[in-house]
Length: 124
Image (tube, rainbow, N blue to C red; front, side, top):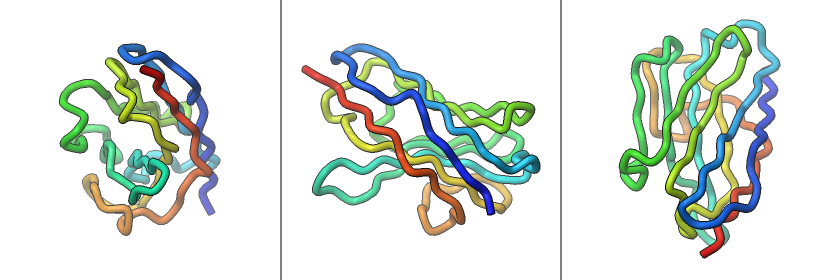
């Protein structure tokens, strides 16, 4: 059982930046593909970013448009999401997810483990 704990959310003004972190309890963290998703009130969960075990295969949601960067540090069992040029429409609960599969995936159903989420609020 992998436990994922997100941190780094908060309140930021439009145009600002936040760095989300997701720490995994699993020492074999490097075998998991990782992803970030988000869910705004009244909306479905939305894919944000994903990267493979090695960190080579990376996908971003269409709305990202170069503003976000996903990365991982396997030595620290942590995946990051650097978010720049934030917009009010980025306001949501952000979740990290882990799945034991090759490559990376934008589909929530690919992932086996989920964190509890961290709130990101962007004011205008």
